[in-house]
Length: 220
Ligand SMILES: NC(=O)c1ccc[n+]([C@@H]2O[C@H](COP(=O)([O-])OP(=O)(O)OC[C@H]3O[C@@H](n4cnc5c(N)ncnc54)[C@H](OP(=O)(O)O)[C@@H]3O)[C@@H](O)[C@H]2O)c1
Image (cartoon, rainbow, N blue to C red; front, top):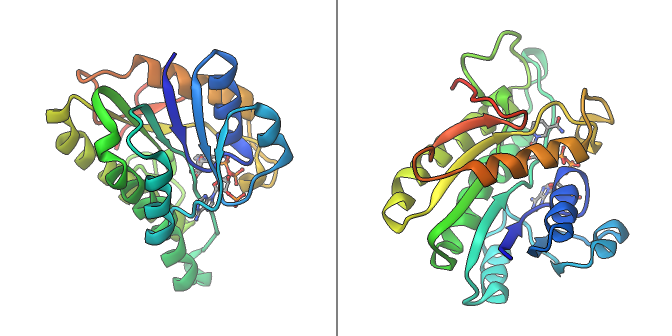
């Protein structure tokens, strides 16, 4: 049984990750801002009032986790607002940077002493943060924040390697959740299952790489 820590678990992909890890017998520490009945029904440990964009909130979170060792830390929480070139909104773009780029770094840094040799860290970023994959433009804040999250993940892979901790950058697919307004080509059950397989396969040999939940590597 592994101890798995996940952010953003009250809905969407995070909720499904919490459910599937719990179902396979792992001990899940599921964090959220506000608990949902669906998350309560999972039956795992829930840590509420966790805002990954807020230093003091993440500080309190670290106190609640205490000295417990984590086998996996999955940074899943994220936000999306759409800005086209003609409708740039810098406040929205800053907010996405806080949550999507600084959030995973803030949480991982605060919990670094909970990660021992053999532990794994996942950052659910997005292929829209890939330069090579960008063939359409738009979504300035989201794309830029996810590109920054990818860089944070590669940096973390270097800084955590000496501790024996591996890091993966993960794209869940285009998933039907509230974030996409229910649009997408796959569902949260399939996406979470794929992400779990990616995390299972992650090792120090593959640390710092970027994976699609369908099991293939993505370009930067
Ligand atoms: N759906 C897709 O097609 C897709 C594609 C690529 C990448 N992703 C990424 O996958 C991850 C999960 O997305 P999703 O589709 O499951 O979206 P979702 O259903 O909207 O869930 C997002 C989760 O993040 C949480 N969150 C947002 N801001 C937060 C904050 N400041 N502090 C803590 N938690 C916060 C939300 O909590 P609240 O309920 O409190 O807002 C929610 O639990 C995100 O990182 C997203 O960018 C999704």
